[in-house]
Length: 235
Image (cartoon, rainbow, N blue to C red; front, top):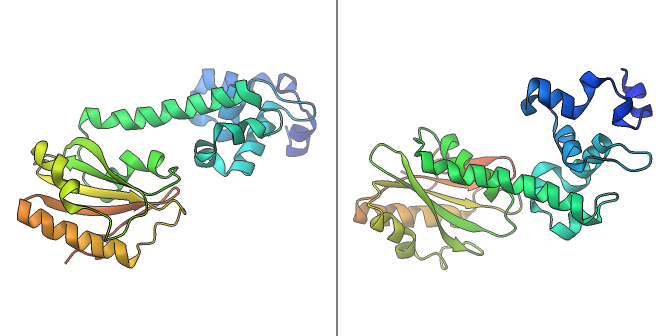
């Protein structure tokens, strides 16, 4: 089927069976489907002049991809043409299940071998947050994740972050090392001067407490920055 033919046929039931999202998922698994096709399965039906796949494409475009749909309020998703409360609820529920799966992953005690390993644990959720949050990944002597602790919520600057509170959970958990993570709601993970200042203070406190600070990650939308790799705050 050519692109023009594909666009001209609005109903998914008019497509070849091998091209329909649900049938492709059943035969080849969800990994082969595009984001719009996965959304189409949740939407189930389209509207006049627009099938469910085209609706999925429109939602992704209007709201800024899957992460944008995650960030958008329930009311904003409902307001998209042809969506409404029932379909919005299905989409939001599916995304929340994905978020919880990532959140539960530390219970398997993954080992952190790189900044990307650490970022992968949190960036799905933290990249969608509307305000800054600071969290601490607690690690044992083999760099295995003990758990991830929320520490601070709000605009992050060196005068607001309490270093003692940041290490409290690490001490109680007998953690050998920590990785600091916070997000930039703007989506741009470029470190600020205050980020480097906070990092230096955290590292110095860690030395006193004999807890290694392995890195400080800044999470953006679909990307992250390691302050250690950029030698900001780390000697």
